[in-house]
Length: 381
Image (cartoon, rainbow, N blue to C red; front, top):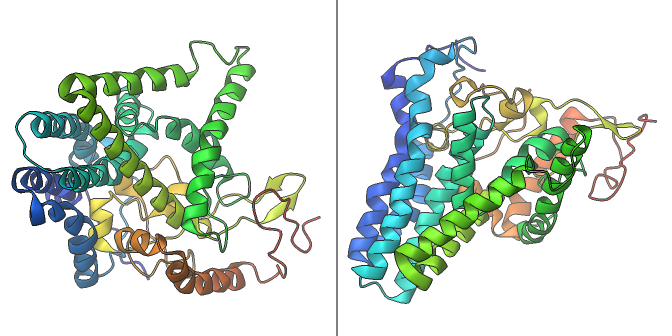
């Protein structure tokens, strides 16, 4: 059971959510020292945070969701300052390794993979928080962070498609039951840009505008991405440009591993005539692990994020096993397992089947709940 509502407005309560800053010195130490030092950032993300999860356990306390935004400054601040920090880190590293550094090619790959872990595991997570806000400045920061990962269409796909159709066959990034990560990865790389474009074009059409109207955000996406590509070339030449693209690929890979974990095998009940039940906490995997929620600014309270998508991250609630399905570990450990489909299926398929039995005992045949079909559970029509 969750504990009593806790106050969250103090600096001391907010500081654990600044764990992301740990990436900055670790990545620079790797760039300076090479060799073993290059492993510090991956070990921090996957090793130390998972160890802290194991030692620190679960945080089952819920915040006062009525806390006014003015009292959330110390939480919001880390998401607001990350873009200049990330920009300095990306282009500072590109300049350093192309002008002063002496790393060999395989060390560069490890270094910029670690950088991609920061731009994907932190930058995109912060962009996700920012793009959900009403403030234009916060949304712009989200766009800038997504452009540095060369994945700007994610904003359109996430807001216009994913949140509407999550846990249904109409959502490209809701992983199907028994679908391995690698086939999922190919599918989302193929389908999500098209899905995002169609969603924006439909919005423009309702406003009486054409697909190539300046209001289409894809022009902004293209301009921002091109600007960062040009900057990478100016700072580091062709090698700098290649390293920038490589870190973006690593960030995208990490993002889609996370997307895969968040909704694997979970499906909303089909009501007939193209309609599905409303999104509930049970349609996302919840994880209450303390340290990884600090690092990922409560992204693992994903059940509440989809149930109440307008809540800022400090106000997200966790749920009990009676209310939402629970992951056995935090995201850093789970995304590592997800990269190995047989291991993932052994761990998660029994949990999906238990979820079905718990929340949908009336559905006997789940074979229709897959991409490209109209699921019709017993009694839905």
